[in-house]
Image 1 (tube, helix red, strand yellow):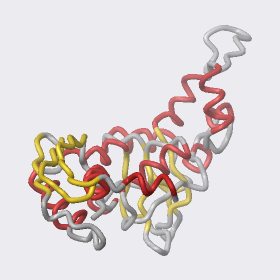
Image 2 (cartoon, helix red, strand yellow):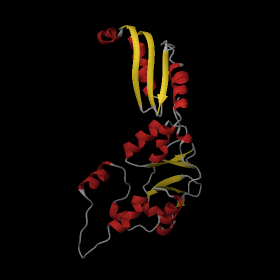
Image 3 (cartoon, one colour):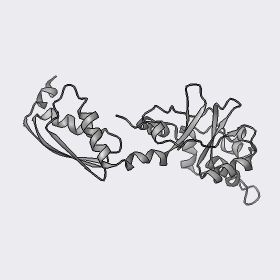
Length: 233
């Protein structure tokens, strides 16, 4: 029922080792048109991540005049305080190799994880890319925010089919056979008539939880309101 990271991630992504020079890392990012690159050890296990922002620190912290004493803006300092940035900015700005530039340990994810948890993990750690690793920690791919957007490009027919067969079909305690589902540009419209109001609410909730659904328009009708019993429990 859930779209997995393996279905949207980029495969065969380039990686660098700890001793890779700064300029080579920059060339890898540009050639692959990526915003981040994983750093791996000799066994292809992910040990860190370097982003384009990490490399740009070298330019950001160059003094434009004597004794400039540049400090990043307050908002950026707060992000560093509460986020996950690894080494300090100035320390990274002096780095010459991947090992000196990377954030380590890397925030990684498994290929079988649902994309919703990938999005939450990125938000939690303030990162935009996650190396995808196998059970042994070896690199299998990379997923970025733009990759996760692919859930919204799913064909409407696929979304409708998933709602009917997976979301509704596996609802063991609800009779949702009377619901008609139509999807247009990711917006789901539910029509039909059900006996219980709670079933109508359940149908709307299940449809909204399907990956790629932009919105749910609930036109369902019901005969008896059984939700008042919930409020007295």
